[in-house]
Amino acid sequence: MSYQSNQPPEHPNDEANHQPNSTEKIGRNMMFIAWGFAILLATWIFGMWEQKQINPNTSPVSHRVSGATEVVLKANRAGHYVSAGLINQKPVTFIVDTGATSVAVPGELQQQLGLISGRSMYAETANGTAQAFQTEIRRLDIGDITLYNVQASIIPNMRGKEVLLGMSVLKQLDFAQKGQQLILRQNH
Image 1 (tube, helix red, strand yellow):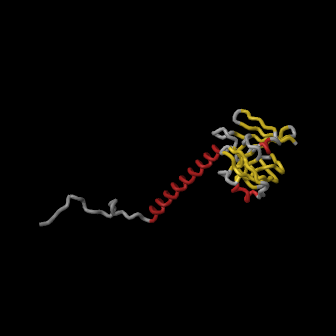
Image 2: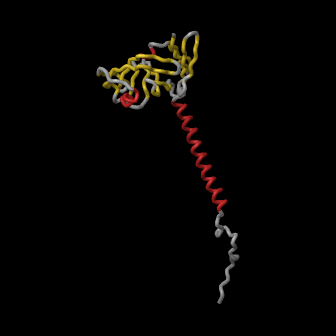
Image 3: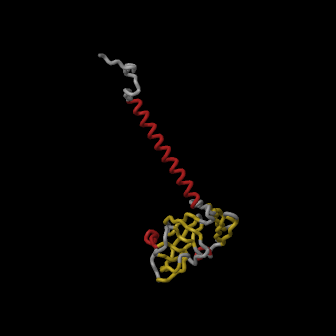
């Protein structure tokens, strides 16, 4: 007894038996690489957009006006003024804090910024009383504004890497808020 199948005979061009040639393999690999690159690019663009939402002042805009230097900061979406800057020529992120008496530096940044701990003291912070150490910043820059010998505090248990830009800086400048902008002005 012979058995006959209703299936057509297998042909070399059948999908199940098709072996991709080297050109198809290269094409498929290139497609995977292109998709991977597109995903990485989209992730990078989203990260840049997200960073701009947190800190819209990664490159603060400076102007010379009537012999003075002005830096215009934009508020972030939470309404805070966050800006890139320099302490002793090292990059930092500042948060403007008019409630802070001086510049407040997290302890983990002390060595990186070349700051020396001075007299021990206690500081009243938004999170309660914290141990702090007096220090002096040799040079502080925001955009084209440069200040020298600025009083500051090192706060060892301060969370984050943002530096609070307090009144020891702001009292040396004229500043005004207009809409979603903070204008810092250094008279020469």
